[in-house]
Amino acid sequence: MKAYLNRLEAIILSHEHPDHFFGLERLIKFITGEGKKKIPLFLHPEAFVIPIKSENTVEYAKKFAGTDKVYAVLGGFHLTGRIFDPIIQPTIDEMRRIKPLIYRTMHCIGWKAINRFAEAMPEQLLLNTVGTTYVFDRE
Image 1 (spheres, helix red, strand yellow):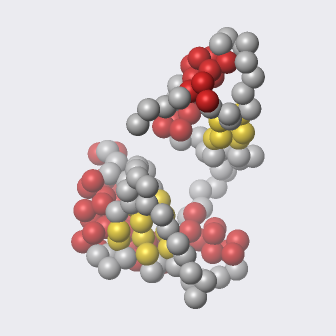
Image 2: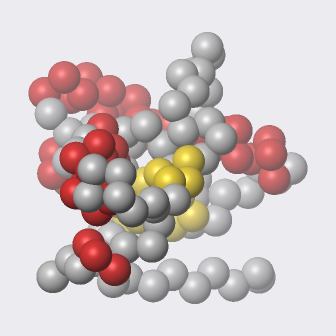
Image 3: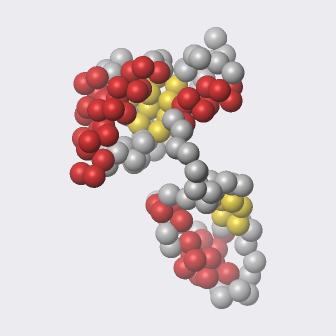
């Protein structure tokens, strides 16, 4: 894939994960030519807010939507690396409790967690790939 940075019209940052913003300062300097060109940077209002209390994201979404039914969960949960091994099973247990009809993994889940989810939730788990399009029906 070839990136044409001179065609970049804006930069959008949704959240604070390092894989989303490391190198951002260097990229902006490269694109703007040390300030000779302006480029808009859009940040989600809470992009760098550190939550005081951690809350299960799916439970928060259920409250926000006013429903107990979860159709799909798309995410990786950042379970890659030895430090996260102890929380893979509790995460799987929680996902089974939530009972989504569909769970799509994303880039940051890690192979060990993918395999564990595949064993625990074979009917719900599908791997996400670049270029995948999701169409959700209202039914």
